[in-house]
Amino acid sequence: MFWAEQLQNMRNNSVCQHYLRTSFLYTFLTCAFQLNGDYIAGIGLGLLAEEVEMIPSIRECFHLMDKYHMLENIRAHSLVVAKVTCLIAQGLREVGVDISVEVAIAAALMHDIGKTPSLKSGQDHSETGRQICLKNHLDEIAPIVAEHVRLKTYTLNGDFSEKEIVYYADKRVKHDKIVNLDERLAYIIGRYGRNRKDLSKAIERNFLLCEQVEEKLFEKLKFSPESLSYMVENQNKMCDRRLNSNELFLSRP
Ligand SMILES: [Fe+2]
Image (cartoon, rainbow, N blue to C red):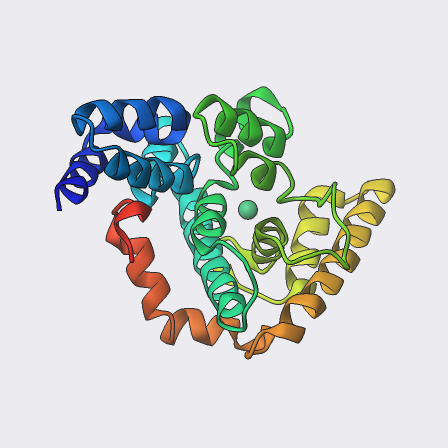
């Protein structure tokens, strides 16, 4: 179909990709014009454009990692966090939870995007990451990045959200290894809370919430927190395919 070819052209065109993310109306009008009056096709394209608005592709996430000089060890960490995130998000979808796997993966890949710049500036890396996302028109990803260390606007009894998945997944990955919450807590206290009693207490409180998030997530999921490591290593072909495909989410079924 003609509109499908147009969609493919837009997908392959970086300028159109930008419009897809930044301006639904502009995209709609452009499509309607390009399709020479085929308004139905234009509407179809417009709706698809709205669907992918603000969600970066895997390729774009890696491009942004390069752009903001993400250190190799942080990149490796982010990739494992994305794999854990993918497993949990996909698992929740399989039991009927309304969650966007694409948004969750993109946010996981981007969650430490502010870390390398923050090493120089001393600014909170979550806030730096939020600003980077907004600067790059990733409005949907920005609040998830902003709350990946601490959930600020969160109720445990609320609906499942991408941000609690990324928040939890990050707590399960030390460097690029999957560990349990106790091991990650011990590492963070050792690194940031040593000789700082107040900070240590705050970190412990944060991990208490994380334990509750873990309980909430795995009450629904068909696998246990302990099996995550094995699953990422051995049973994660779908997530590996997603993360290695280097394609736009738009092109995925
Ligand atoms: Fe992280």
